[in-house]
Image 1 (cartoon, rainbow, N blue to C red):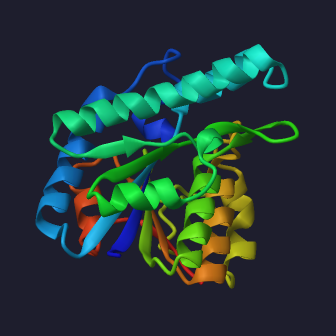
Image 2 (image 1 turned 90 degrees about the vertical axis):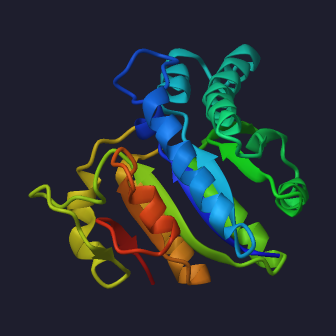
Length: 249
């Protein structure tokens, strides 16, 4: 199996939460799809991609509007979260990128995702509402953590994780990009990060905490960067130096 790069298309990037409900940033998604296509075309023999789409104004507005503990409310939230994933999939396919969409609440194990990778398809997952004994929001970061854990069990290596947002990285109290976050400096930086805008999936602090846990357990670095800027994703996919926050062990 090829090495993997996991890309998280942040909900605030592809469907800004301050926009009208169920409104996707089509222009940004199209450009990101082009960058993914160009990378996949030239690097398909060595590296495979998995994409996780945040739900943005689709899922976040639905969670606030509907009661997730009722059957109908849970259905409406799941449907809203899946909608943005299918918009992303449609645009990727229009750019000749082969994708297969998986909803976490339907996915019993990792095998269907691995099967898609073996067929040279890009698995596309999304933030979701997962129902076990109760209904819980399952953020894109949680989906990434699940993927990494299951891939490791199958001895499939994740090379790096790329999280794209509308910011140049994780910002300090002065608005400057924090170049590196690790277990040693996190406590000092935590208050500044915690002041970032929060949402129903926990905001930037949640992203950093999940990424640190992945770095600690699996020695995989996460890069948080600005997907609204042309070429940032391309650079990170190729391992080039771009403005970003690196979260490492």
